[in-house]
Image (cartoon, rainbow, N blue to C red; front, side, top):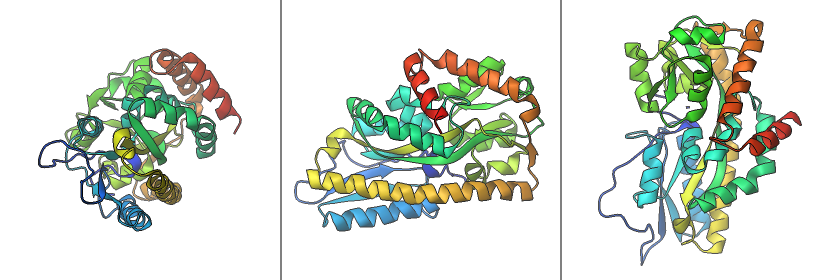
Length: 336
């Protein structure tokens, strides 16, 4: 899924890490429970600073019985590495984006179905209505969903002009190799996606192996993708979602009281980050315009974009999420 240097930030996130020694539980027999948390956010970013504040608050409120140890900066791997390492016991928790969340709970990708949820108030309403159901899905997969976090409005950026869906056929659009949603969107158009990890995108833009990317403005500025791009869509086709997850067996090592503290402090940090994202995504949009990025108004061909989005949503139903869940989310989204 910020999004402030060449690493993915906000809740977009690619971080992996090498930890010495054998895989083992984070709980030390004679010391605090240490929760090892991976994130793509650079430590100097707004997200990185909020993580540090979260860690200080959590340790203080648990009176040192448990603590968070952060591994930030996107030093290695992709979100699939986060999930693999959590399952292997090499790390315990992570901040992940749409892609990582979908690797754990596939149906959650309905929240990013093209053209379905494009405004934050819609997303908040839908998630509030379905939160308990999604939390149970994560629990069944061996994780606890600590909190949600988002990365801004997701729109198309390109190194070359575009106006209608068919313009992407001649390009080299990037689709995260573990993301079926945007790849499905491109498939309806008839475009051939370049399937690589997010940490390979900047290099791909440099060499022109990639010339089109989906991104929020805050992410494009943060990781410097915008320096290789010339055009961005005025309209967005979904919102980058994300969140914090923890391995259930590690969560279960905490006392019920400390579990509540972890959930509460995670929620407080995420809501603080939401305010920054809402503010800075709009600010990043204006910054990109000031720096010469041309804004592409898709409205003259909006019917074509809407038709592609609708077909993509329908094709993903039954494969990524159920038709009934799509119908339910569509109804909830229309209420806001």
